[in-house]
Length: 464
Image (cartoon, rainbow, N blue to C red; front, side):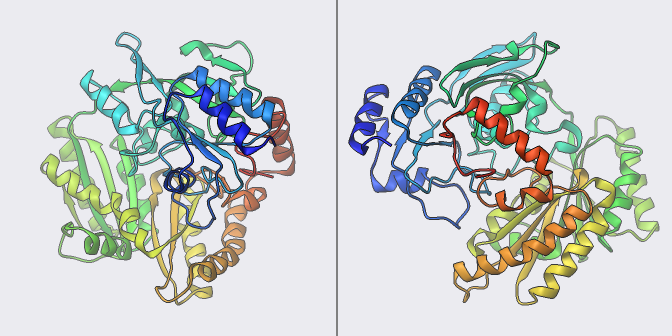
């Protein structure tokens, strides 16, 4: 690698005035994501404003041989945006413009630093809807969402981030600008390279712009929260409701998880009865017939003994409060330094899968508080192990890493994924083989070599 002063001076020449930072606060803030397991040590933080500046940075990296770590909203939970070894962090905070919009095509071109909520609000202003949604929508950025193929709470109906991408502009690790798919809905002309960059966590290059599809706005979204007798009842309820209603979300959380939310914020309990688990269903109550059907299904679930109690939203405010019971979990447990596992299986295996993992974790770590929640309608579960207050963080993380072997053995047994939507990053790379075969990994390394021949793009993430 070239001398530090040479790199700093060359980056300063590329960027707008004041858009290269080396002060301690900037390095600490922009050199990390939401993981708390790694020492942060970037060389500098670069804030480009255009694809051309990003390209110039990457070409310089190849010339002077320094590594690059991309940084979006830094809401990741797998260490994918952590700079630990003198890398230059490329932050997209100032590439936050809506570039173009087509009402007839129902699509919008955005820079990578556009915040998810910004895109959602823009779509609403046009009478349209961007359906990819999650608790971090107010700070996560589109480039980061695509780099991890983020999912969230609406996957059961709308799919993952990749399902809404018409086109990408990327700068490869070799410094070449590619315009992928030309924003076409139908394009069968060989390999669809945009999907290599979606979910690649910046290891192949940097996404600088994306053209995203929009859809119609949903009508009268209604929320139903049900108290369940047993975790297996989640599937009973899901099958019943999906047979009659088109659900836009199907989430679950434990009573312990709800307790943390209510202790953290002024959120009312959904009803007086207590249940070990809760399901949150969302659907479009576009007419009285849909609401009548929902009530009939609720009564059927109670009669079957699957559901203890329930509540249905009667207003937008009540719907938002019911959603807070689920969406507020991550924020409410954050002070406890949770160790998070983001795992998935096919939906039909969820009850058995969750039961096996819960038994392993509670058996081996009886003194740890276990918090379950997740997007159970698409098979994605979030296992959160909370750090005891008197246990040092390094000891706690070491104990959690020990339990991963048992957890991921169960994931592998059920043909699941060690990372459903958070990416691999640094946290999951040692466990990639539980989900991907040796042949898969070898091919992925070969693809990285093609796009990033010097290995400068987010090195050490996904695999070494």
